[in-house]
Image (cartoon, rainbow, N blue to C red; front, side, top):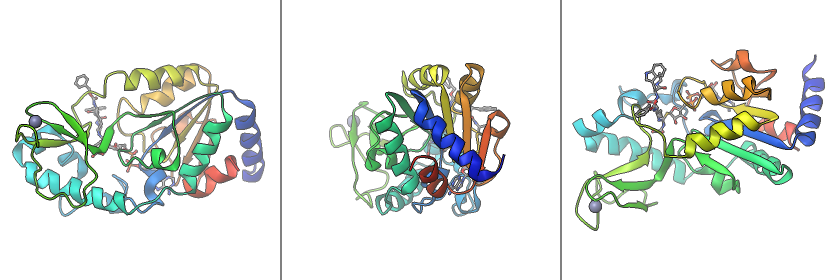
Length: 243
Ligand code: BV8
Ligand code: ZN
């Protein structure tokens, strides 16, 4: 089937379906100027994110980990949602039964106006106290002190994100998995599909009979699960699928 026909067919399908689940990754925020993890720009100094986004790295050098998050918070604060985020807002508004599960911690889906969002890897604007456990939103860029300390107890604060080796926010994955299992159409956008259990959502949807649409610049670990794969930028393809 040629691309134009595929786009028309998928556009019609998304209009017909009443239960839609979407999984997004760093690629949906790339056109907002936020580096992806595993792309060329994903490297920061000589470290890889997997060597920074772990409890062990934080215990070893909280200041270094915080420098990385403070730098990312600065980039994200300057970023705006792109047409890909906006297309997903339109899709949600048309669809009676919709859930957007995002691996991104940048909050751009919420900023764009998406409401039914599960942030399965947490939120970079949340700070958790490692001593008293209190959480708070703090959007200061740059942070006044690194590493930041708790105003209540003086304890060390950590970013409210899920690191490798940590379990996902309670209920978040369950809600996303239930939506994936119940979906008639499942869109997987801008993710390499390298991280579990997020990547398994596409398999759950496929096994439950959903029509799977992938939007990605290149093939991913999930491409073999897709009924249709659109190769290109999410900020261009999603608006064509959801005008
Ligand atoms: C857990 C938050 C268990 C922090 C992140 C061995 C095998 C399999 C699994 C494992 C294993 N060993 C360990 C595991 C589990 C591990 C894991 O999956 N490791 C992988 C790396 C092998 N997972 C975990 O540890 C998870 N927890 O399993 O807990 C458990 C249970 C009970 C009790 C205790 C523990 C937690 C994982 C969460 C990690 N946190 N982020 C932060 O952001 O700082 S993951 C991180 O990767 C981000 O969230 C990111 O979103 C996510 C996935 O990456 P992608 O979004 O896919 O981004 P990437 O750069 O890789 O790809 C971008 C894609 O976009 C590319 O395909 C590119 O082509 C495309 N693209 C680029 N530009 C565009 C585009 N597409 C369209 N348009 C464009 N313009
Ligand atoms: Zn505290």
